[in-house]
Length: 367
Image (tube, rainbow, N blue to C red):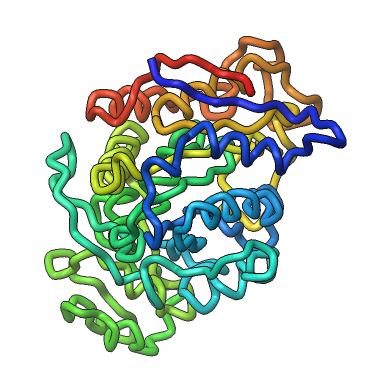
């Protein structure tokens, strides 16, 4: 059984929450695994513009300080989004991160957008999964010597919950990798929005876009799914068809997570923050009311165990009144099934376990 270390939010003048976070880091024994001078990514979600549920920069500071104490070179990192939002390219992404409070002065280390200026900087990794045989991981994450995966634990409309596995799989993929996970078909043109500006044609690397009359058209057979056209269309006329069923999506996501994990193994660690547990992803430009009370912080070297423990802790809670929860009000009720009845959220955990990434059985060690 894997160990998952847990701290609640009770503090004293002699031991505040930042001290507790450092204690969690010490329990992971990172100093025995990371070497002086190594480049260590701290994978976070900088929050969409208008979102307020992401892990606060202040809470990242003790993680960065602990890494510096052992002589490594930490950097905060995330990848650009597939959808058109405030983190679509590195410039917008960094602007959003700074707006949300992430910068050198607040966290104590630089920020690197892992998949480059436009989300195309990627490294191919073989995974030989049930669905995918190869994944495309953001280059800076692939090239890092180690990784601390810091996750705001919450609900998610495609996976039931969003935890360490999602942060690792979806969060570390290039733009093309995100498209592969979400869809099995090419983007399409909404002709009602297309202005015929032809900008997408000049950016398509495979000449898969042409004009049909005064509207752009994507040739499915030529399209390689890089999603560059989605990024450059200023009229939001090029759309992603999110057509993958949840089970397939979760398996693809886990295969991407495996692609990152398999490169790092002994140098990858996970910290889940069970604070302001919102019902949906931090990629939205808002944060709905928390579904349960703030619970605490977990740390583990096992991504499967930490996500399973996080799910269990949330489901052991009574739901907060007037939240998105409709029926699962009692302790023990499945909050994720209540939010997303059609999704079997255990798929991601069971598949990751089969791939050898970790175990659903765990020992919760309170510190």
